[in-house]
Length: 444
Image (cartoon, rainbow, N blue to C red):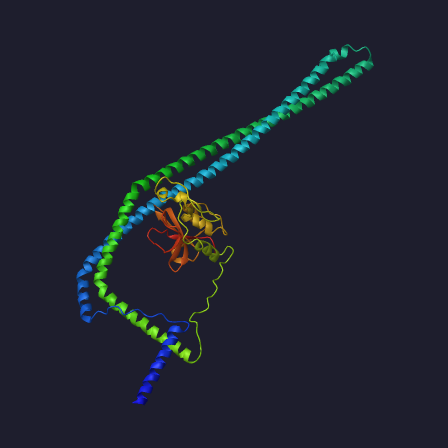
């Protein structure tokens, strides 16, 4: 009996020692929570029979959800298109205005040349007047025989002939100088008229571009104002259908989900027991373990105009707010007003990116891009989606292929994008609804 007591006592002490190792040693394994319910086979059979009865309702709910999602995507695509067309018009207006300013400077330079030529004409005319007046004061008229007849001696006659010859040569030089100045004036006048004509054309082009920008902006605002309520309604409908679908699926597969969770708990429990056994064995052999692997250093973002550098720049902006009109080669910038939904989200107060602004920042080390996704679509080599590679730009079009959105492909069906007002820069699965058949490749 005493021996049995000693054996029991040793077992208890050993268990206490192992428990102390498990609780007090480094690298303690967290305890697995109590097991979840484990439904019986009868309960599972009953749930499967109920699932067959509800299958039709679940299919109907799925169709409703697909229809609501398609309507919402179509609406968002149309609004995004109008916003991007407003971006395009702004880019065109600024380019035309720059051209008009250049032409205006050319016109001013030509006018200065005209003034200089006119001054030369006046100078030449004054020189001619001086020659004519000097000839008259000496009692001679160029080309008149009276200048020779009144001579008293052959010497005086020779002197007068030399004088008249000099005056005649000077007169001809002055006339020739005046003709050259007049020709230069005419050329300068023509250049000035041409420059002014170009300036007027460029100014008219700028005004037309601004009218286009205003019209596109007004259309975007009207579309957002009139359809924002509809978008909210569709979103609410989508969420309601999702909730009903979730509830139906939960009723169909609730018990099977419990069985799965119970199986997961069993696996977790076995893993805990194996970890505790390893720790006990290590403690018994005198080998300590922290239970933590050394942290490896994160690789630094590659520099230069490479695909990985572009992706690293884009990924560095994850979580940055969406701001319509925001973003340049240096990073996020303050958004601009649109008078509609973007203003309702306060984009003009936010520092962030829109979809094309994020691409400008990502590809800053490769190529300067315009702040309009439609122009970015034509900024590089087109490749079919079947040849899509990491670092390519993806585009979405609406009704006739008009571009309204751009994102950067990351590989494995993922992309990074600045989606819409109220969102942030994020990684998303590639959406193939409305996607353009070609991607744009700037590298490789």
